[in-house]
Image 1 (tube, helix red, strand yellow):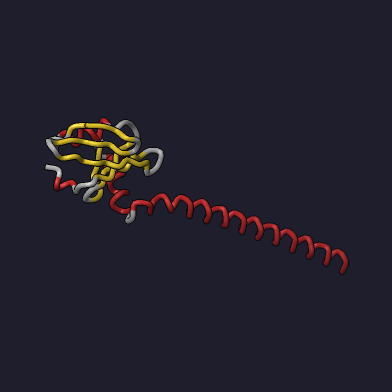
Image 2 (cartoon, rainbow, N blue to C red):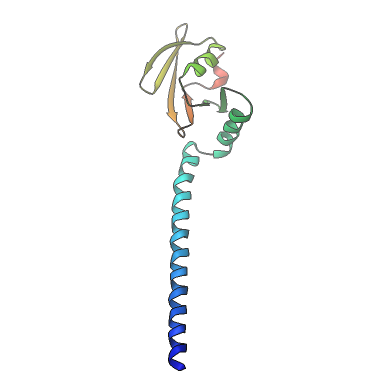
Length: 134
């Protein structure tokens, strides 16, 4: 009877150690997954204004939303939405050089750097503040 008890106890310990190992592996994978995803959120600094801007894009039926003094965000696609937004301020499309878009207004040039925030959103960084565009 002692031998059977020891056998059951060793099987139970093996079972517990396997469960603990599985829980540990799952926890490590979850932490790695969320840490990698969290890096995307902080690439623009404080994530709250950008999160609110994306919320306004999704639920406010807007095409381009500002979230900083010189930054805009839009859903993926061509820069025609940005061009129509800047046309309201009198800026005309001039040229595109890779990820840089140039706009002209008289003798002034507006330089806009475009980059994907995620595969669904594009962030535009202007070389002037939005209140200087008029």
